[in-house]
Length: 120
Figure 1: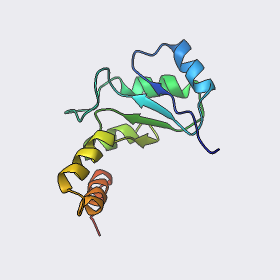
Figure 2: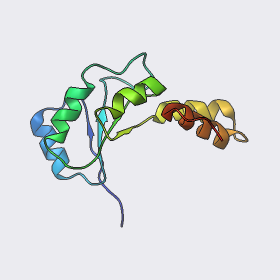
Figure 3: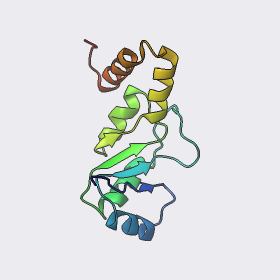
Figure 4: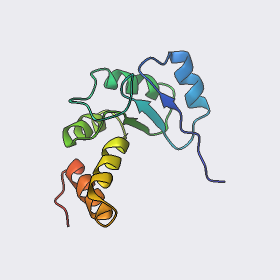
């Protein structure tokens, strides 16, 4: 049916858990960058490269990192070690602040800022 199981792996995940999750994964693997709740932080947690490396030992699927990612400098740091940066909470906040009429353009401008491109 075209759906994939996307496991979420945390810094606290054991190697056994990572291996088991990756075995059943499809699409990509999602690494949670921190313990706790989502939301933009001042910086990317220092353990992210190690977590991504641990996950890559168990899968050839792309690896995404999320939770606390929402600024251009976060995205640059994450994509040095992972295949994608997930910015869910930051995107929801951006769209919510823009309102229904301007949501699409605000989302586009937000993504452009994250990847370092000028809107338009």
